[in-house]
Length: 360
Length: 226
Image 1 (tube, chains in turn purple, brown):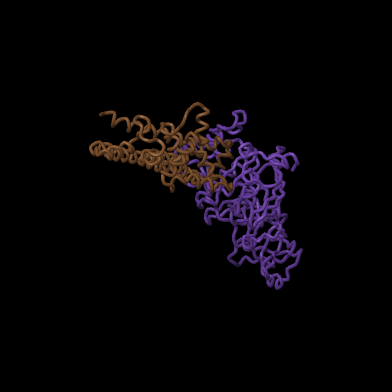
Image 2: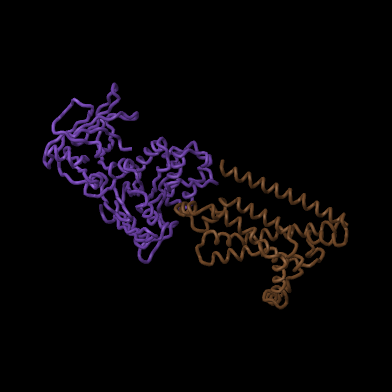
């Protein structure tokens, strides 16, 4: 990451009972997730970046200084877009007028994203003359995203854009977000408290707790780094990227191949051979065996080498870090099991993976 | 005969309309400030705005008479401008009505601006709208019902004004003799027929105006939900 093409943000502020103190350098492309439990300050960081909250600090986006010791660009002068958790479409304006709100307020020469382009991208063609109150949750969020994009921002901030949506609407939105990530050259900072969302969308991950940054780095490595005290407990896991190689009609399964092995997972309707997908392996779903034992209900057996064994934050529980080929995986076992199997670094074992889910 | 009825009616409508328009201009920034500020002056200012609600109209009228009179600072100011004195003129009535009806404009507007909240304005700011732009194209349309309510209440309250007018306007036909004062006059002179015509007319008129505006307000409300 070159210095020029990045975002740096340093903020410090105090609220009653809560202090924020962060110093971040984020990549200038792709999706960065700000991740943590509610109340950890991730939304405050986003608000500081937008200038909606005035904190002490500095903010530079791809060479533009938005905030420093002696400057503070007001929100409406920052070339950013912000998608709020509750969409907040203007209720007195039609979908079209909502979309045009920001679009008409930027100089025509600055318009990188065309009106029709955004409308098509987010599938809003049939809704332009409707009022926001008549739209479904997913549709509202798509309008909000299109409205934000139409300001041709240099930075897109999204505050849990999916948390107010039901499961069906989430499935509706995710492909659009993935398309944005792949098609737009602008950096996106995405606040989330869902590991699944982070796993599926983010390229870069920032983990926050109590107003501080615990870890910041590429998503896969950051999720797999067991020395970061994630406090996710049962949700801890890693992300594995791979390719769909086989589709099985009879058992409704798909074979997923990654660098280090292959796994069967439940077939998704839209799945095609050759699709690149990410799956999430939760450490609580992985148990270890010393020998390959096919006579059992668990279908996914993958050989791996133990890399490290460390105690978890929960007493009596250990985290075993393994390598399947070059791919890091974590297994969460009781310390007694680690002792009885006499597990130690360097040992060859079989991972028995109870469940595999697409990261969504 | 016709003039005895028409003059007070015309004068009253003129006073209520002028007062309402002026108050929407004056009250909107006050309401906006009260709805958004965290300044320590917020409570005292809100209290001053609400004073006409609790004071007897005669108290207000008495002080206005003093302040706008030849010895008062407003009176000296208007005299130095060559306007003369305000008491016992239509302009004096307008000034008094504006002060007397201030809470009926400011409070509904303040409530409306408060219920618009910060978020829509923040959204507008992230969509590049400058402060004035946010006010005109987001806050005002979203507070539309507040403006309607404020206008209806101010208009109706000004029509119903009596005590303040009597104190500072007196009873000059065509200049300060509004409906309420004319009715009082007729009753004093035992002209019950005239008093009846004006009073009944006022009841019907007020009812029609209120029903019309409430209906508009209700329509606007459901329209926002469509």
